[in-house]
Image (cartoon, rainbow, N blue to C red; front, side, top):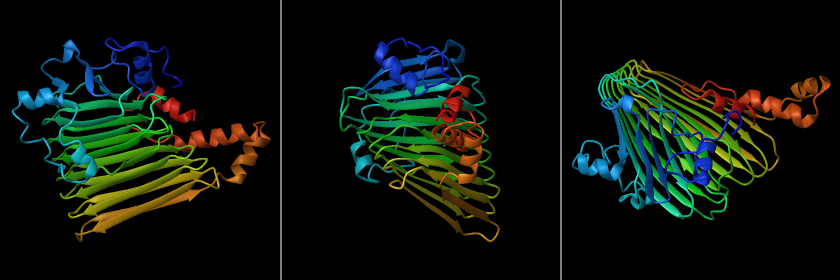
Length: 363
């Protein structure tokens, strides 16, 4: 990825695997802790000495043993019988367990990386807990080797944001063109808590479908930001849903999509307002090919007289007026189009490193 600087060799990984992790934003030497999972096993589990006593990060299997089944968290927001993919992950190969202790605010991000290298399938279960008054920024990357054929990744993730805590979670997907991807996510945000999810998918994948669900209590907030680039014949289907169950809660769903070739993108956003709360859905897209398809399906569901919900969607092509203006300034059509697309993709992404922002802008 552009702007990242020198590639970082990650202790415990080969040069090849390090480069794969680098390409989806993971350096493992820059944060407060790291977890890296390759095919069907954990290969890196590291915690910065500075943060011992503030956070713990470990494989989910070790956490289940240490905390006697994690009865308050394991499969509590998502049922293992939800669909065929959760059933596959009922006994996961692994996954990360992250717990930020009460009152601790981590200055440096935690990093996690999931890699499909030679294995065909992987089934993961991740749990993240931000205890009361804590805050954490998590950079997560998922990738598959270009030579891997017909891979399958299933990742179940449960996030628990306790009172006045915050989680800022950024996911960079860098799959190959034959991988099927099923992230299954649920989030519980307690009073005064904040959950921000930034999802970046800038490379072709065979089939990505995800529908994260957030439950918001009094004066809490959930924000989902997505930047999507559909290439070749890839399919990206995302459908965030937020339930505003407490007075003063806020929900936002924002997406930017660019499509070329035969790609298809479906953005589904739903906000349910069951209290005196506020929510907004916004989807914007640019279609660069007559064969591409972009569908935006926003839904707002008001169940309280004091709720304030809105949605906005805009899909179109690059404005000819803008293109002609840039070409009149000396740019050829390809460079002018690239510049317009780069500007379109520059959206606020809290917690995303600057080099990742530059990479988005360089597309």
